[in-house]
Image (cartoon, rainbow, N blue to C red):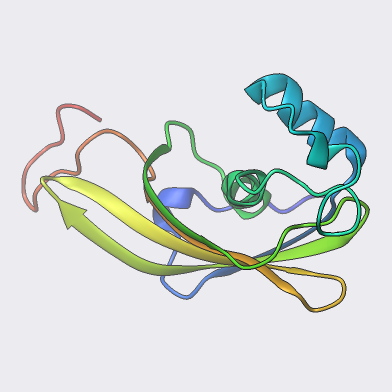
Length: 150
């Protein structure tokens, strides 16, 4: 029997998520169809020696990482900061490591911050990002008060 996943709103600072995936031509094609971005470097030769993945694809996959470990509906992505160090090469396996580094309440809403890093199978650092989320949109109740929006 599969163990039930904890709710994202209950995640603790320091919790880690590791996600390994292969950057396949199909993953790149799916992104190109959805975005309309048809750069020829994604499917053919590039200055990096063969096809590369669209850079923004890496941080987009970090969001999917959360669903591997947590449940929770209504998550709202509110901010992203990303740094890119090298292109992800199509055909390489990538390991994304994420860690919840902060949780706080602002204007009655709970937020959390996930920092992630992608490294390819050769140990090349590809991307780092920091994402801020609302794990649920409804404000939290102040101590001693009922939450009418929950």
